[in-house]
Length: 148
Image (cartoon, helix red, strand yellow):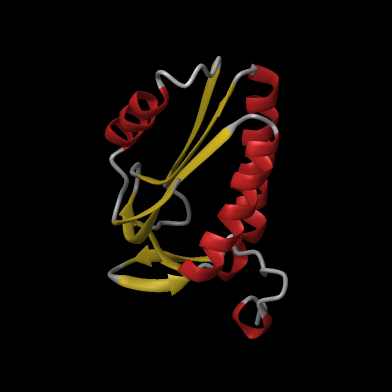
């Protein structure tokens, strides 16, 4: 399950919803990861653009990988502005065994940072500035992923 939300994520609501959805699925492990906008370089927050067709395809590949391991993966991400100390990214893995969940959440979050078609902008003094220094080129994205 992948969901895109306008603005900051409601972490307690999303985590509770996911937990309740899977509470009778016989998973022994539920490992969430919550990404929060932190204060750095004088920013007021971050803003995100998402290319949904590639994101959904990328996520589907991860769902298939999780299914082969007997696990389930969920993700929520923000679109638009997210201010300091708010969440823009939540991922979770449900698995019968903790080791599978721990390894899968680590691999998933790292691949997300490297491969997901999401572009980050700093919000600073009322301006939206591409965060080029903290962005990763996406393999196969051509000019959209090239650092300039």
